[in-house]
Length: 180
Image (spheres, rainbow, N blue to C red):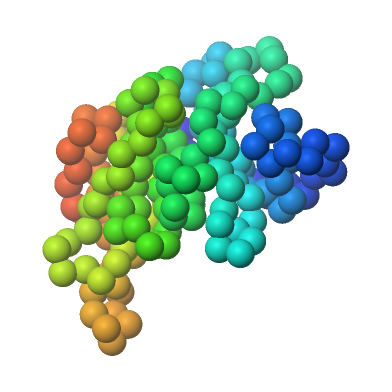
């Protein structure tokens, strides 16, 4: 199963340019997705100091010890990432919590160079938070879990959406992705 894996690092840092490929954020969070035996894609996020989280999408080909930056996503995705998965080297998803944007799921179909926000909530939702994303490569099912605020009285509803066509369409279901 290909799932978002989260890790937190507190690295030492020699490079002082935060947009440099070699820069390591203080207290960074990393989401990795093993796309194939030969390719790993990761999303590196800084601590959101002052309300802005720096976000860098990178790739590493197996056998290499270095990461190559695909895109700086800081200005592209204003929400805070909660997970990431790539189902192919071109088709990937980032799930986020609510932070100004209604969309909590973002999709790329060009390897991470451009992203489109997808709103999976209902018309009357006040907002939705994405909480997790998983991809089962055996059944080719994507599963997105979210929590939607549905009233001003702080009433929330947990939801699970699935896609069986690599994210082209989504269906609201009340069952989680089956575990192996």
